[in-house]
Length: 158
Image (cartoon, rainbow, N blue to C red; front, side, top):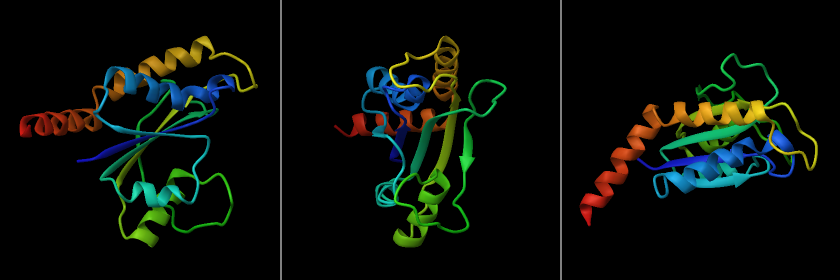
């Protein structure tokens, strides 16, 4: 089952880099297990991209209060689409994939709590703690385990 991880953020804006840093860690330590895409923001065109996958995880920084500093939750398609040239939500991208490409991948969102957002700021200590906890939780999730099974199956074919 092909799984895509989309990291959303901006590496030069403090904690807004959380989505990218999550992917960077996966790329370094779990090379080849997932396909990865880095985005500043989701766009309409991402509906075509996700329509080619069975599963998608959207990882992004958030200002919202999360008791554990992160959460992994199911993502459902929006009920409609609003036109904007930028900033589409994961729910809207799923809706467009379903409407335009007749495929809705199983999707999840992983928001990670951030605190500092200014240009040039480094990652905050608390956001880094949340990132580490989110990575640990992800690595014990069904998403991760099923990707592990698929990688093993591919290796056995060769």
